Length: 331
Image 1 (cartoon, rainbow, N blue to C red):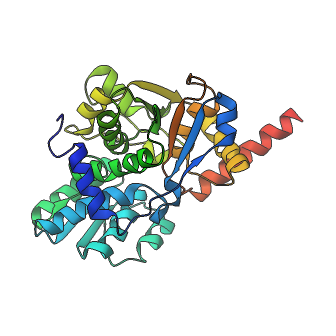
Image 2 (image 1 turned 90 degrees about the horizontal axis):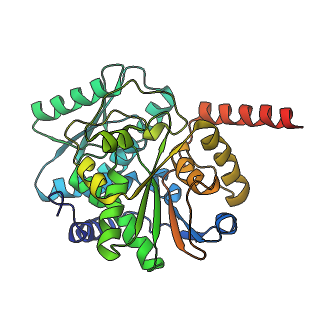
Image 3 (image 1 turned 135 degrees about the vertical axis):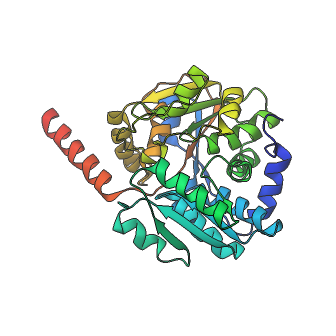
């Protein structure tokens, strides 16, 4: 066991905890990507999960664990999918949740959170400052801080994605997953490597935010200014003590870096071929296949995680404008 409380048996416990509240999302064959690669490519559609992201799984498992331990107050920091997941999970677990957000949080995201009975605290203008404040607040209030990725229960909750995939397609040989903090790929890889040690795990990062890949390459966490990326869910400074780093170092076999132009064009291609609008982080993983960055064996069984469908309106407007400009230039 690489990290305490992160194993196949822990993921199976997580699955039992969260099963009544999460969707067993479809694992759908992509004829578009299968034809492109001559492999058998499957899409794990977590964009259709409650809150439109896989994040509900981890938040729900962590708060269910808190309930079992008698912890009432839970804290976190996020302005994205994890915040929505925490808010939704609070209803299922009857936990008190407070979410710290930066002072410049968008009104749209606040409006989404206002649908739930959660406490909202504004602090700081940068994610790491907001996160440190949330941790301090949790300690002062004697509550549990739940990181979006640096938490064993969160990782095991995300690992239930892989359990569902192997139930549907037992002979999966390659899994492709976008990587930010590493919680999703750590959980998935823990399951996959236990079931099939030969399963190839491919991590995909945007070139504008390759934090985890850089940490794996250098062997240490490096803080940096976060560049803009359409895959905003993957852009963050990793916590110095994150338990995902040793998991990713041990379990991820290959890394792929995707540039912004390929993320944007893949969002359009996915909409054209699969009929769904996906967020940049999900498009990042799909681009590794659509742009033929990865080699596959004929008829190899491949799964790509469509991690979310929450698209920022301004980002989508930018993608559309760039697409139309590009189309006019080529006409």
